[in-house]
Structures are given as C-alpha cells and as structure tokens.
Length: 418
Image 1 (spheres, one colour):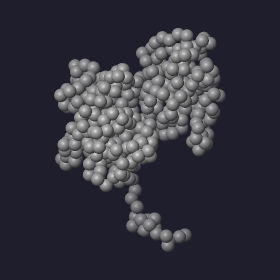
Image 2 (tube, rainbow, N blue to C red):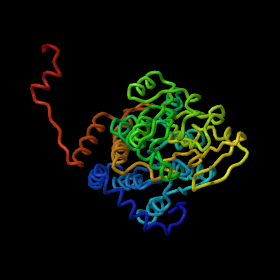
Image 3 (cartoon, one colour):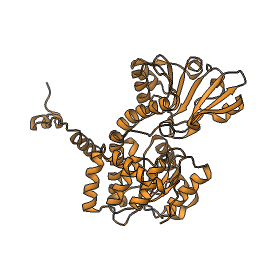
C-alpha cells in the first residue's frame, strides 16, 4: 500500500487517541454499525482531503465499514496529527498522505496522490482537491459521481465553479447543514480557537480586548467564548446585517482601522483575503497577537507584515514575533493558518460527530441518487439533517415532545384561525 506519513512507529499512540475520540461520537458509531451490515459504499473509491485528526479517522473508518476504498490527504499543511495518520495506515490499511508541517510542494503532491486513486466520490475541506482535479486532471473528473464539501471557504469556491458552468459533478455542501454550521462552526470553532490561542501563548484572556473579524457562525462562536473568558470583544464586519446583529448581541462594532490600536488579540474568521493589512499592522500596540481561524492563511496579509518588519524570530513553538520598523512587536500564531489545529487539536469530538455524520450519510445519498443530480452545489437533504439531530439527542439521553394529531392538522391547515 502506498502512503506517506511522518513515522509509522507513532501508530500505537494514534490508535489510543482515535478510540478516545470515538467515545464522544455516538452518531457516527450508529452509522458505522449500520454501514457494516448494509455496505452502501461497497467498491466505491473515495478520495478525501480533510484535516487528518482523530475525528476524521473515525469518519474514514466509518466509510471503510460501508465498503469504500478510501485515500486520505491533508487539507491544511499544519492540521495533521502524525500519530493518527500512522495509525490509519498501520491498523486500518488506509492510504494516508499527510505530514504535519509539510511544505507547499508536498501538500499538493499529497493531493495528487489522493487523486491518483481515480475517485468516484470526493470529500473536501476547502475545495483544494476538487479544484486541483478540475485544473489538472479533467479526464478523471468526468468519472466522479459526486462530492461533499465541509467548510464555508470551500463552498464559496465550489458555488463559483457551478455558476461559471465548470463544475463537473454534483457537490453536497455539508457546511450548510444545520447540524453542521450551527454547532461545528459556532461551538467547535469557538472553543478550539480559544484553546489554540491559550495553548500557544499562555496569555490571560480576561481583561484583554479581542478583535474578531467576521460575524458568521464561526465569528459568533469565537466572540461568545472570548466574552465568556472575560475579554472585551470587538467585531469588525462588512455585512450591515451581521454588524447590526453583533451590536444587538452586545458587542462593540468598529472598522478594523479603529479596532487595530486597541486590540490585544486579533482573530480572522471571514473566508476572505487581506482582512488585516499594512495599515492595520502599523497601528497595533506593542505585543499584539494575531491569528486566523478561517480555512486559508490569506486572511492575514503576511507578506505585508514581513515588509513592515526589521526582524523576525520564533519566540515560542508556532509563535513568530515580527518587530516592526516603528519598534512595536506583533506575534503571529501558526503561520496564519488555522490556529485551532496548528496550536491545538481542532474541534471537540462530540461536535464533529454531527459534521462527519453528515459527510457519511451524504456519501451514501450521492451513491444512491447521483443520476438525478445536476452539476451544482446542493444542501444536505433535510431528512438527513433531522435524522442526525434525532440521533444526537438520543446519544445524549435527551427526549423531546411530539406533535399531537390536532397540532399537525393545525399546522397544515389554512382554515383554522383564532
């Protein structure tokens, strides 16, 4: 079996970590049990470009239980957990191409290795695999039945491809599922981002000012957790509706140029590029900490920061200090890549349980229904979304009410008024 991991000897500790994560993923366990019996993915080749974490390992093992032949590569150069990658190779016979800290050439070589699997399904987190497939291997793209996309940034790219009529196969946007973005983006990103910042810096959040760029579901989560830890939170936005919502939620809303001089921590979660730029860096106070929790590191204009600097040095693992020509120091976390994975372990398993349940069931849906689908981006079917929520509640030991016959009739009727 072909694979490329850091050290296969790390497999035993990776196996323990995968098992620890699985204990908090009851929905995926139930799906895996059914997949073993029904084998809905039998013989299907899946190329997955995802963060190689303990939670992803449990998704891949679920797909394998359903009969799929899976190849896995990293969707970010710094997000791989090397012991997990080794365990998947050694204990599960899954071809993994991922090494934490891999350079850009290795990153795309690994994506190419996944594509050489001649996939019938793709799974992406950021759309790098799908865009590479379309740009360099169009002959293989025409054989793909469909794909799934995990995150906001990837969905934006794929919808652009669909609008320009260049998308070669249907994609299900897992990110749009309520059981994904309402939970993973908000609670997962919120907790894991603060976890990465605190692990990387050991700085006190209470009493500080944290500037959060973007008030989507990820921004809401980061802001909520930062406020919970005692920070004053400032939101920057370009969308007037989201800016208004942030104001109503009790946050200060400012343009970045006004937030730059007062922030102690800066977190970008917009999905756009150059959100924090030269004109902002020069206004920041000495010792400011900047990081990104969006998918790509382009949200921070790092080349501009380098040009403004007269000295750079690593002051802690994954913390790079830039001394500007004005003498002030700015600390960049994790090379501007996903701070929750570069400096911590990513989202908690219990929230990824729902996200990856969406991935698994969407893969099954595509195999059954791809002939009916056009070459565009689709939401996760509502029935799948609700079933995952039901299973999650059951896994948590929670019960909810059911509509009575009278209530069902009332909601379906236009005749009944006051």
